[in-house]
Amino acid sequence: MNGCGIARDAAGRGNSVFLCEMNDLASGTSSWSTKLVHGGLRYLEYYEFRLVREALIEREILWQIAPHIIRPLRFVLPHHAGLRPAWLLRLGLFLYDHIGGRHLLPATRSLDLTRDAVGKPLIPGRYSKGFEYSDCFVDDARLVALTARDAADRGAEIRTRTRAVEIRQVDGVWHVTVEDRDSGVRETIKSRVLVNAGGPWVEQVLSSGAGVNARAKVRLVQGSHIVVKKLYDHDRAYIFQNADGRIIFVIPYQGDFSLIGTTDRDYDGDPAKVKATAEEIAYLCASASEYLAKPVKPEDVVWDYSGVRPLYDDGASEAKAATRDYVFELDTPGGAPLLSIYGGKITTYRRLAEEALERLAPYLRSAKAKEGWTGKAPLPGGDMDVSAVTALSAELVRSYPFLAQPHANRLAHAYGTRATKLLGNAASADDLGRAFGATLTESEVRYLMANEWARTAEDVVWRRSKLGLRMTASEIAALDEWMAANRVSGERPLREAGGRT
Image (cartoon, rainbow, N blue to C red; front, side, top):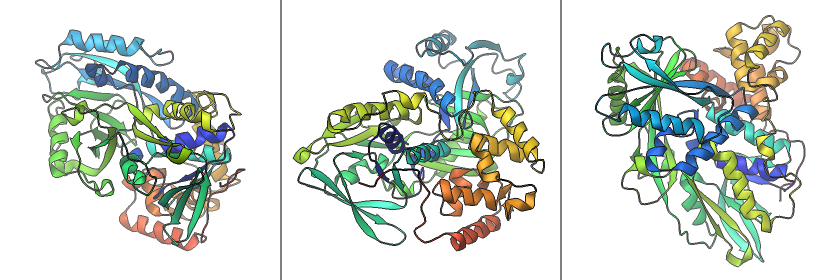
């Protein structure tokens, strides 16, 4: 997310930009989040006031530039006797409402859980008082893909499944050798400025010959989530306090499911091999069952996922207390700048990108776009009012009467105003080509391959969408086979302009 955000901002300012991603876009940390654009209510306890304020400001900015993939979500916080006192919760929520310049989202309100509908899924008689506040839900992997798409539309070259295998400096210019992981072909990219947004691999990138001894350290923290069948009928999320001081979220997910997460534990190992452990799954089930009238059991889990957060190591004793703020390390070995990024949150990626460009401004010749432009220009498909997604869905059904309403809703929320690009002049369902299952059609898959760097079924059903929750293993295998047969060797998504160096 950070790398794509910086590429977008830099390209929009007129710079020549090349981004290489060793796997698929959002195949690491950025697709394994809790799917929230939020201020981080619990960070107030660690006095992270600047981070919370910045994140709260970003929350509404991101919603306005991507209203199709970001939507408001109300959170219910029950008061748990014996944990944080009600007055402390009320104070924290007062700060949360006021330090970030909330304008569009509704304010916090107190709840009588014995009478309000949101109290019904909870254990009867245990929770009587609560609060409801606002944050936003985000399709995290699509946020990455659309940010990359916008960067490419502005001239950046986005190269996926391309690994930086060697970094060296020659006469004040960076020479980055990149290797296509499918073909094995290598080439050298020359650049005056290098940004290391390697996430969990930030230190490995530096060890690829950059000639920099990192002063900062990354702390790898594992966060796991589980998905179960829908636990309740209303549209609010819950934030539950645990006796260990942590919190978990229970979030309505993909219409028919509930998402529960996250854990916080230090991780030592290859970030690419992280898996949700049985212990973490049991912890999430037990935490939710402390509140919900119908207990959640490990056998209820239909999908789980786990990611590694590359946090800045601030020496905190516990993973849950480690800062979520971001830290830059700027080095100039041999005169050419190398900016490495530690930490950060999905919510603050746009502001992080702005600050990165500010740090690099003395080394860049081009600054056509003014600072702050990324907070005003919509992401692809987001050129509409924040309340217009429902109307867009209805318009798709009018324009394409063969679309079922759930199908139109999914396309409107995934592609926004660009949904018509993949539907084209279709006059019937047959015109969309082969049906792969769960409303996924050949027309959509071709669009994702041509415009969003999708190469495999996994890219499509778990990152560009979450249709893997609804498709069978045989349907996914058939899709993978079809994509392999229809992929042009060396095929890359189109871009409107730009260079490679």
